[in-house]
Image 1 (tube, rainbow, N blue to C red):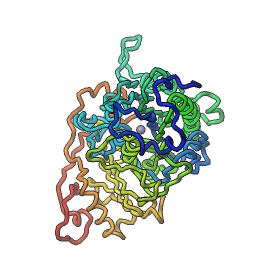
Image 2 (spheres, rainbow, N blue to C red):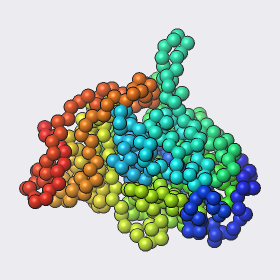
Image 3 (cartoon, protein in one colour):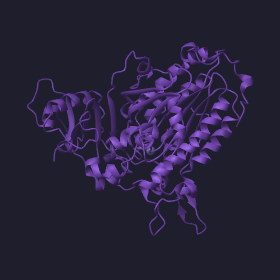
Image 4 (tube, rainbow, N blue to C red):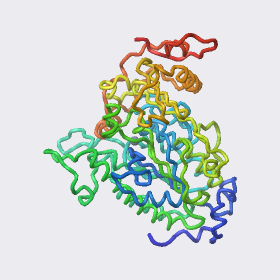
Length: 497
Ligand SMILES: [Zn+2]
């Protein structure tokens, strides 16, 4: 795509200064405004660790497209994901709320595995204000099944349904549940070419997630394979990130041409990271579903009208901050009870303090989390990061909880909980104020067969581990931490073992 087929419906070029100030100039009332409005790309890179991008210092993979994007805008060095399970984390990106605020908590569990319709979503706000809204996806775990289609006029995703093979057997062919980023980008550009209005577009790419979704041969040449032909997972991951970046370059070029004036606002982040080899060494876990730095440190890059160029922000931010930031940049009303806040004070310098980060995993009541069989300590995880401290709270096993000093120990290798219980008390008190706990099992999901089969084909856990029993009781925070009682202690649920 080399020209802008929609320029006829856009206001004429208004000059660099006006474009740069678009976030301030655009009418806040949305639809009906005669002001030119930028199009918006929200790009989520599934399972992509920040430290595998060269703009974040990676030497294992080169990512020139994302490096260039970061140069043209703002890169947030220390962004924290809200969860390490795909639909939960994406719901936080799309709503500006942590999981307790949006209600999508697990992959499988009736009452907890869909984004409730009443939760305001960014897509609906854009649509009501006159943007064309579209989503183009690369895998089933962000599909309609999880309620993530809310507000999208165009939703190019996956149904997760079984196929019947030639012998009459029900199968979930993994290639019916995911697609490579070259195809996703092709489909995206085709949709954009049909739009006359400015667009709000969510593109989901996921090459690094899956070892069965392999880039073209020239990208994987030299990656060692085992006797069965499977690629070395860590070496493959780095090449998959590079392939992702190549397709992102193509996507950005096409969308910028299509967006016309006043331009394209771009936001890039990941739903979560991945343990990989260093996560395995440090924390005994190479995948996601846990909440150490390798799982929750994600890229976050913004560029386009209203975002200053060549900006790097070192303060801690959260992926829930993206939705209110995008809304502010285009003058879109998007309020309510958000956990996130616009990131613009970070680059304007009016408030560049670290933000408190939260993340959770409710694996113990997830009907698709057989990993808790191998990692019982991963059943209930609640993370609260008030720099420099990170509390990793496991209410079903309080004694297995951890406290890290991220300033002195950024790789989270030394648990300081026993030495710093007063710090832990302070952080747990703040965490408890969010009331994030889930202490009742969810009912079986209505479509368990389809969802479980589809997720199983994609390598998710499956299993019936949600049947495990957790006898919760509420105790004062001091007792939960083994400290002397203190007047006014809030109560928190724990399981006594
Ligand atoms: Zn994911």
